[in-house]
Each structure stands twice: as structure tokens, then as C-alpha cells.
Image (cartoon, rainbow over the protein chains, first blue to last red):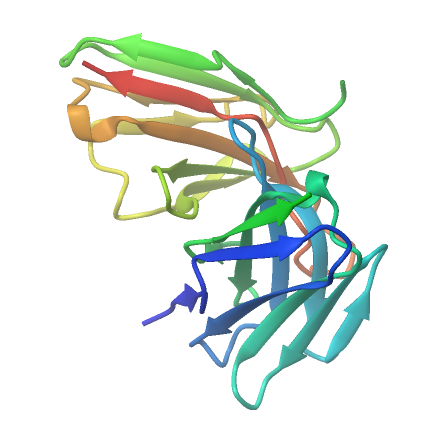
Amino acid sequence: GESVGLHLPTLSVQEGDNSIINCAYSNSASDYFIWYKQESGKGPQFIIDIRSNMDKRQGQRVTVLLNKTVKHLSLQIAATQPGDSAVYFCAENTGGFKTIFGAGTRLFVKA
Amino acid sequence: DTGVSQNPRHKITKRGQNVTFRCDPISEHNRLYWYRQTLGQGPEFLTYFQNEAQLEKSRLLSDRFSAERPKGSFSTLEIQRTEQGDSAMYLCASSPLSGAGMNTEAFFGQGTRLTVV
């Protein structure tokens, strides 16, 4: 069945270092992928997205990489800051309206 | 604030009572979604509206759950005869329908946290 999962439930990084959060998806028909950030007590916040016709997309301090061959998605955060501490979800969409979320990775940034 | 608005933010209710949540999406967004999120998990899809039409309901949405979007603007989610297992964060999101019919990111509200005691 469809599933989106994450390799690591928790990631701890030093302030200023780069963070890499990984995600595996199982539905090869997925054509749109989104990374969301969720802080405690808040709804998920859009970070960056990528469509299946691309393998890399960059935003401000964030980069998403998509490897369709192994069905792997990653989020790279450059110069991680304390404000980046949150739970990060990858999500996939198969061309319909329904977005499927993974369980999330909690990022801790140590000062 | 022109984002997605949800009310109330918190609701505590006794088992067996009915509760209703409201979602006001971003005004120009014609797609509206309801999700449920339990602690430590990602949001789970419940239902979807395009304008006033409810186009899909998840099997997670039992007969006790009903959602409406009567005028294609705000939406309500009602849970009848609440059970302790209904305790969760209920998230609403909205997105525009792009001209090319492609999916775009959903914008989430702050959620309504329901506690059934």
C-alpha cells in the first residue's frame, strides 16, 4: 500500500552545522512531494516542494533532493539554527488531492 | 491574519457528547481538507472538499463524523457521541486549484485539540 516513512525519528545537530533529514516512499506513482515543518502546538508549515520531473530544488537555506530510482527524498538545511528545531514531515501526492504524510523526524538543534 | 483559521483551539468534552469544529480557509482557496493528528504521528487524511462538494472521505471517518462546507467557504467538522479514541488534533488545510490542475501545497491552520474525558 501507499506509505511514506522516515529513516530516523530523531536528529540532533550542532547550531551552524548542516542537517539532512531523509524520507523513503513506496508509491512509485507519486509525482509531488512536500516537506513540512511543525512546531509544538502549531499546524504543519510548508517548507519546500518538488515535482517528480525534477531531482533537486533549492530554497532559502533548504534543498530538497528526489531520487526516484530508490524512492528516496531528503531535506537539507544549511547552517541550522535553533529556530529550526521542530518535527519535519515529508509528504507525497499521487496526482490526486490526497497528501499522505510520514511519521516525522524531530530535529534538535544544540546551541 | 489571512491564513487558515480554526476554532476553537482547544476543546475538552465528556465522552458521549457532540462537538463541532470550524475552519475558515484562505479566501481564494477552493480546496479544503480535514486531517487528524495524534501524538508522534503525521497528519492522517479525513476528508476533502472542492468548493462545496465533498469528494472523498477516508475510511477513518466513521458514521459519527460528518463534515460540511455549505457555501464553499468555511467548513465544519462534527463528531457525534465522542469516544476517548477521538482525542487528537484536528487540522484543517486549504489550497488553491492551479490553472493547470496541478497540486500545490496545502496551508494548514493551527488545529483544534480535542480531549475526550
